[in-house]
Image (cartoon, rainbow over all chains, first blue to last red; front, side, top):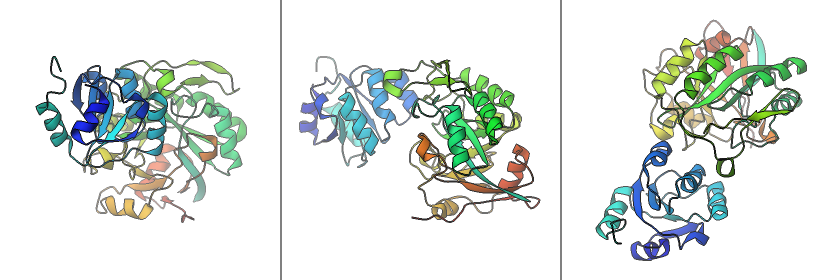
Length: 115
Length: 251
């Protein structure tokens, strides 16, 4: 499933890095500690977090994550937006919590084999 | 008691996120121009540019305290400030043993090791932006064991700060002071820091400079007898007539 399709199906709002909306989502990961995400998120994961600083974009590039979802209504910092635009890493926002968002994605089969 | 203008949180070109213009020598020169008496050079998880800055400072009459900004397991930033380069390098050795990964300069930025003559000595290839696998309490204990003082970085900011990551300042954490960022509200931090804490936590502000123009954008007055770390500790606690004072902010 592409990031673009996830946005439409789950009502997420793209706020930066729109040139990467055709990136493929192959799984998901929740985490607010960058070190944990770097160690454990799989390639192509959609990353749900509250962290909004620009290093989240670096982590996505490093780990080849598909996109970031900022939960709880968080907004990216200005330098995060700039870096995401530069790298083509989509940043999406939602008012929902990480728990609710992950539940919806999981129920819809995001990241399961064959999806 | 003497009064010194201090900016205790300045990065150099070794920090991946800092400007390449921030050579140890350039940092020292700009600090002198800004009328600062003492700085602490605190790169992320590393003290590899500290010696050059101390030597450049000696030539320019600026006191440079060797420091590091440590990113603990909780992704909380803490400044460690020492008297000597050897102490800072001993701290670095502990951190390096617990720091995984290699830097990607294209993603996070270059990590330049420079000498006091402004010459590039090499590049640090460790992932300095990363978190060390050591918890905050242990980090602060090691700083104290090595003879340094600990300052919780930019506690008013949501990212990488003790209040952002933990939400509170643990009572049993051996911190010496907390730092308000250059644009932060001193009053709101004062309210967030427990008043009845013993010993008292000092309240300082500093620039957290990543660009030369940031240097001195926030400074703290130190009322101390000399610029030794022991005196800083007394000033943070408000002991023996030593104290720190944040100048009133304009704008």
